[in-house]
Image 1 (cartoon, rainbow, N blue to C red):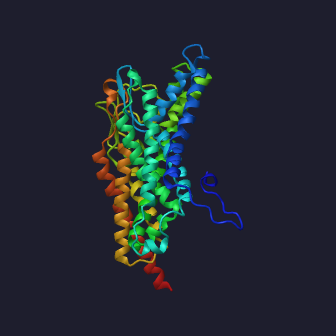
Image 2 (cartoon, rainbow, N blue to C red):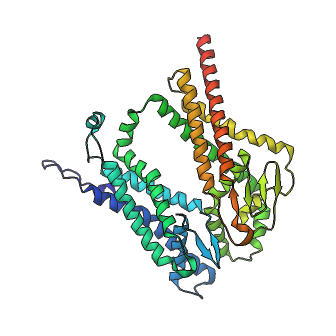
Image 3 (tube, rainbow, N blue to C red):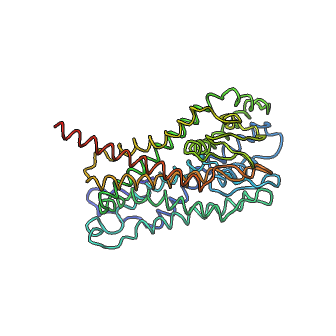
Length: 409
């Protein structure tokens, strides 16, 4: 894509003028939105044909389902038989975010010759390259989202356009903008201007979030494998054909990140709900009738969990401590900067995990299923405490190891 945006210079000719910034960013925003959308439209048509060999409906029905799935990944919600469903399939959201990152990075590479150079930026000259490109990127993405909502909505589904636009704006700000900054080289210039402690804290936050998300996914995978028989039984009770079973597995895979974040809420202590009046927490499990969804087979049985499960609550602080040690191990900072960076980075990581967890739940159907997911406020308190204290302990251990090594030398 970069080769299409910037023409290479030929020997003996004047350097080619860079293409317009707004044009490049606008094309990038449209491409970032259309990439996952086209894939989901194709999957929707395939699903329509697999479900009943094309006997009922038309291919456009499958395309509408694919478009609604894309909108759901952007927080649109929809209405199914009068019931509001607002749970976001974070697996599809992750795919959309990956598309935004990759396309934004290439847009940044194509715009690397625009604006002032590193020396002029260091001298304090304002550089509007990244903000302007991110704005054009968002406008194109929003236009695609508006058109898709208008074509796929209708009175029955009723996706929310304001929610889609809000999600597009947030994803552009948190993913697209940084990708453009990294691709254009601005991120490296700006990072060099930050204090060493701030860079270390950012490294701690990033490493801790990645490590804990990996932990949550692994624990959920173990629980699901242990309950694989129950998951297969749930699926078989629906009597699906081979093609329908494959589609059902694909739909379940779209909610794997949600399940991992639910698991994280359990490991942090607060737990979560799978319906009004239910709770799944280390202190006890209260369940009611559940839908036939394979991922729910990983839920623990009702009652008081075994005593050894309480030890699992130590996993999050321990992983945060190890992540802090890994992030700070090669940084030459004073003991005060080291402790402050570890604690601050851990707190930021806990807040980020709480935000992600808050996105994993929401109304999932009629009646009691309108209350599904963790309690965001409780998760925030537990996550900040676990990550902040864990990272601080890791920094203390690192300081002790350094002093012990110095004495030995």
